[in-house]
Length: 158
Image 1 (cartoon, rainbow, N blue to C red):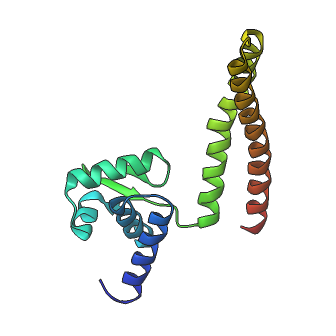
Image 2: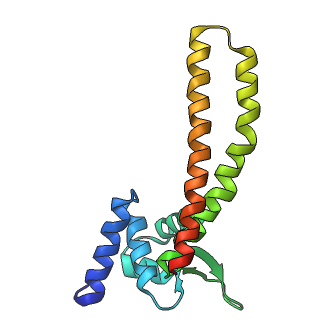
């Protein structure tokens, strides 16, 4: 792998690893990102040198995190992998999902948990734990506000 494409793939692999992804996942992302068309999973295996089982495991994991998508095309038994190429749109999508899933869940569940904590707090250890949960809830609320602002700002620059 030489030339500009090779350099870009190495760049993407390093970026992914800096974000905490393992080397195999990083190679899959780099390869799929630069591909103008959806890639068959067997093509990914051949291009990376990893076994079909390894590729399948990593693609499934990356799809669960919403980083890539895995689909079948009509009249084909093969799975194809796609990745959003627009950094701003994919970031907006990730932030919206974070807000709709995790933050929404936390905002709906934590008030009830805090209420139970307050009713049952008796010891100093209980009070310390209550403070931890209260601070976490405050962080969730502040983070939710920041996410909303970030989404709005990203939509303006897209």
